[in-house]
Length: 269
Picture 1 (tube, rainbow, N blue to C red):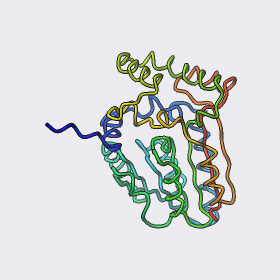
Picture 2 (spheres, rainbow, N blue to C red):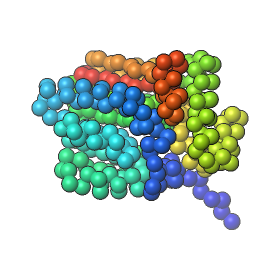
Picture 3 (cartoon, rainbow, N blue to C red):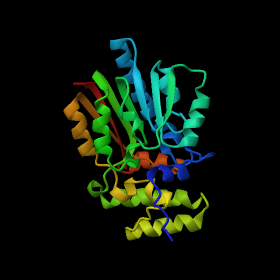
């Protein structure tokens, strides 16, 4: 009798982001105006600058989910190439933008389609890099598609755990747990939490592996910044507090240390 094959990241993404999945519920950058507006403001500023210089802006949006930020890219007048690992999400995006010739959607189950294609003026990755095991290698390959003068934007990735203080980690985790208590699914949620506390991760469970930053201890923002600085004339890092609860988001913005970051790189060398 053969052992069951270990599910691939594609399989786990399908489990986590299947038909009916609510991207907004656990996504601070979609739920909270202050976090969402930070992203939208930078996207509009950078893309506007590209359009002013070139008269057009061709964009790759990596992992668009249900198109919350695709809407803003389209509104800015960009030509948008979307890649999405989840088949249900890709199908929803195709239907949603079926009447807009400026948007093309590619189902990318292996996470490789984004590496080839026509040259780009910008790459946008919102709440995506922390799902990717080799995020530095991925960014380096994506940069190769960006033309001189182009831009790269990423947002909503967790700061690298080893550089964060105990206070930062504790506030972050406790804020998440307080929000999680109100979401139901206590048995599976507690099992996931216990595995994380023990440092044990089940590669067959989407709850453990889709949020891959928990396995890898966040995203190394300094290493990512170094990659971008090598390839762009201007880079800027945003560090900010981000959590699921609206009340705790408002309190954390005033009092808590940053938990999350975004990177904006402009003027590709």
